[in-house]
Image 1 (cartoon, rainbow, N blue to C red):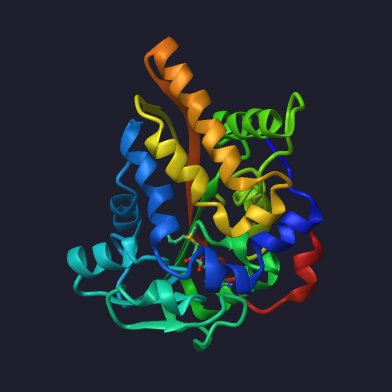
Image 2 (image 1 turned 60 degrees about the vertical axis):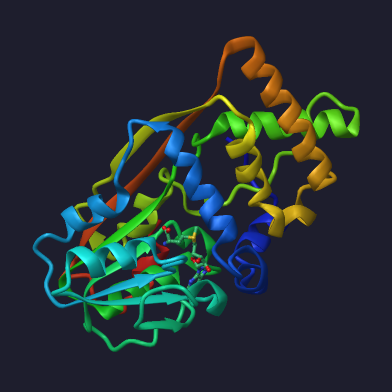
Length: 287
Ligand SMILES: C[S@@+](CC[C@H](N)C(=O)[O-])C[C@H]1O[C@@H](n2cnc3c(N)ncnc32)[C@H](O)[C@@H]1O
């Protein structure tokens, strides 16, 4: 597990970087999503969300919907639902099925109790104020409505973190170079229950472990390159480090036949607590 500096944490939640660079379009997100093609077991994440929403009727808000992977599947398989995609980046929404809107999760443009389900999938680690955002998600959910939040474990893809440090070290001429920015560490699978328990009851985490095994450095290089928006926070020449990482991965594949990455992601399907659903700010200090 790597932990970010305060400056790296700030960059992970920097709205200008997010909207104008990291998620200005779907390219970098698609590169990170596509590496899961080589994972075993395979998880159908939109299918898992559909399963959790089986008894949901009415309006579903996908907050931080990105390139619309979940929005499009919901439209296709649950045409009875009113699905709304929302993201801070106008660019990434361009190809997402309508209706969509550009807004910040920290100030949702929806009325109290107006949604039957809210999705916050792999996005809460990007918001500046995680506690206030969870309070917003609970505010717009009707009592008894469902939130599905997802993220990655602190141990997720640790081989990529080790690879990056080794490659960065080689570029800098030292043993281990600086760790790259961690995207999910601000709201990791380990931290999520503590945040969510303030507004939601019966915290349950559905863990999705797996192993990615590649026989070509391409998917690894694409994954590392998808962090380009945070290149300045890496403390090492970004593209040179990726080039060195590609050489290391190619050497491992030549020696061992493949390069393996251990994954652990997960999601929490949660019901809005009818008792703690009011905007009680004082309870947010409990963690
Ligand atoms: C890692 S992507 C996840 C996309 C999608 N939910 C998924 O799981 O495939 C994070 C998304 O959250 C969006 N995002 C980040 N901060 C946000 C905020 N404060 N309000 C709304 N969207 C935000 C980003 O623009 C990006 O599209």
